[in-house]
Image 1 (cartoon, rainbow, N blue to C red):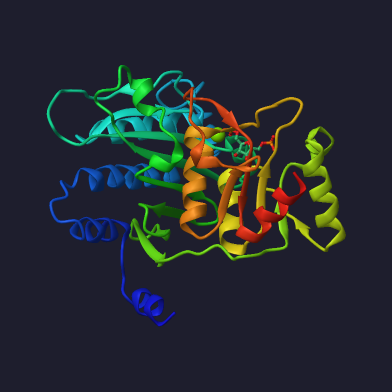
Image 2 (cartoon, rainbow, N blue to C red; image 1 turned 180 degrees about the vertical axis):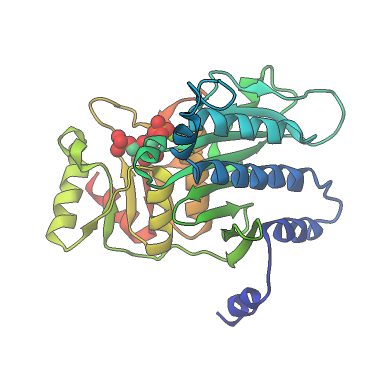
Length: 330
Ligand code: AHM
Ligand code: MG
């Protein structure tokens, strides 16, 4: 559209986008913007560490372990620490919950009237892809903290429809930051030479259709019958298959090119494999904000009432018509 083209001629960083959003809400405290800026700086630190994956082993080999004589840490642990340290510094963060921590961590809790948030994340999703220099990502979900909740866990256990913001960072051939604060989806790309995320797409829309399905077909015989019938139909109708094995990479491709991403229940994981709170819900919000659909079985994914921080769910998300098609077989 002409408006999108005009926006693109301007140079907008993630930082300035966040500020501009805040100015649209007079009286906003800025709390939320500080949280997003902590996520942006974490993304840059994780990206720069990632670019050196395997090199540290080589350089550290001069000593027994690494230069400090410490055991090399796995990148998912490092990414988790980076996020907790960056977010811990922000007044507006009450609670963080991570795939890497059994329990949500209380960062601060006082009875002051300040609006605070819970930040949930998977610090490095698909980290086994790192061994082969494939795409991996960070996924995050931001919820309003309920200070009347009896525990940190109780505050975090909100359905996806209540997310204030959600997004992911894909560490791929470039580093991409995809964000929604509830009014559309914006996409930024890191320019490593200046250290800033620049807006490349102010209103990302997922195509209405797309003849690609993305799932682990090795599990096909374990899928409930409806999914198997859908795959038969797709194969008879000229669909392509694409699967990176990292949710961020697979959902990113689905958002941009259209199609459907599925992680159905399997015999091994009867409730699905993916985590509801910090993998499926944030991706579902992005998908819906981009005009697509996100379901668990035949129901809307973001309406699931969570009972556990690390609970799992099945997932069908992507282009609206393709998701409808899958459901017609279930
Ligand atoms: P992880 O959180 O242990 O990295 O696992 C999540 C990943 C997702 O990124 C990806 O969609 C899925 O696991 C792939 O699973 P599978 O190897 O069963 O296809
Ligand atoms: Mg994960």
